[in-house]
Length: 555
Image (cartoon, rainbow, N blue to C red):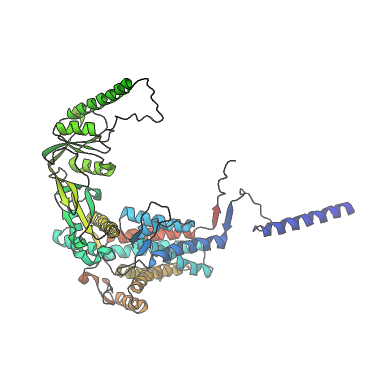
């Protein structure tokens, strides 16, 4: 019996020692660590709070850039990086430049990228709204409300908000003049928070003209944007009937070609060099070196003969063209354009209806591009190639002028956002009032729906409404106005039936958005609402974060 008691006592001492050691390592007593060395895991409240804190940190980064009076950010690259310094208030551009380690922060960055890819605008709004929804959810969890109840309430609130958006939308798609006015107002609203805000009337008309030439297509890559330093932003213009290529015509080639037959290629035209990796050629005399060079020239001459057999008058290659083939083509009256880059060749194929070829064995099967006139033009101090009279009537070019490349880069991002929004609005013609009117009306609809919901889900719906109302508050704060007073007046106006009333950020008062011409795309607002709600729901479901062990280096 004494032997059994001593064995039990030693076993108890071993368990206590193991428990104390595990507590010193950060593990709970009685738990078994099944993860590899270097891996980690956080559970329960700690995991949930780290997720919310990471998302809120990302949301707070771009919060001050929201609205027409939002501030810009300077993105400074790391030392030794090839990236250039940029100044922007575009949410997607800011977030793409941030390196984060928190998984929830990466989720918000991803939804901002998706918003930029899908509709082009609302990248800051979707990130800020998701952060505000998580902020409200954190307060509910502090009141011991279960995350699943919050998710269920958020889903009901998102449904009510979507119905409110659809009810307050206006569709002028059947009236061409009214719809064009809607497009110009949407473009002006989109550009209000950008570097182009001072000339938004000029650029909004330019963007609408370019998008309407697409005739309902969403392929905005048919709109070529050329950036040239010099002049001011107001000197920018739209070339409606031409496509501009920022390249130079080869030496000795004709500078103007009418009724051109264009052959687009992606083929090496520098085969006077042996390009097999690691190749060494040993000869015992210079005569054999001359024989190798002659064979290479003969090979290139045969390739040029095959190109000429296509009957083209213009040859455009994605890769370099060396002197020998360039001179041969020029002697035969063919305009040569080299190093057109993949993007340039793809756009030319789209606007000239040409095939891109790599081999030249079957001339009869190759479709040549057509163009009425190809000529060299001067823009600023640079020469560009202008393709006018192309078969694709949707193609056009926008030339941006500006003082330096920082302004030009930001102007291109701003104009691209406006073009993407307009191309989506042409397909889905519903429009909405801006200035925070949509958020206040959605919040009002959610509050009305929450009164009919029994139980704790109503608390989550009210929290969703508070998250929506936070966006007008942030916009007003960024504009330097009294946010609490302005949002209270706007809320009272909506409760008395003023659905189209929002905030006039120039005067700091409540006004009818349709009268001021402040309008937004229905698709952009809907995408912001649904993406932010889905991201918040996904992060609220997290109760454990497992971190993988780092890869061990061999040796």
